[in-house]
Length: 126
Image (cartoon, rainbow, N blue to C red):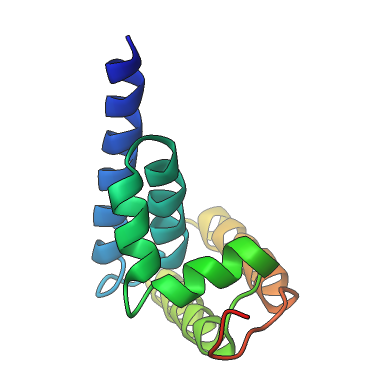
């Protein structure tokens, strides 16, 4: 039944990767956490995907820095904060219930605070 376990990790990796890629153009859907999840689940059942992500010119250094230092680049922090602000603005301009607007805003503020408290990296992984 080892193949079932590997299949589950592969499915999680593919779904995470697709959600991460969908998050690039869609406001409110995060990219980086899903790419990190894809690399992590790939390490459990699909090492070729994990290696591809680690060697990827766009994602590789960020994944390595996260794994090694728990670090997030300043550029990623700015982009994530901007998208959270944009998403929150859209939510407040919508007809959503007030409790939902407040709850989501508080959650995103907590995420932003956590994100900006993470260490930052330079362009190297050393």
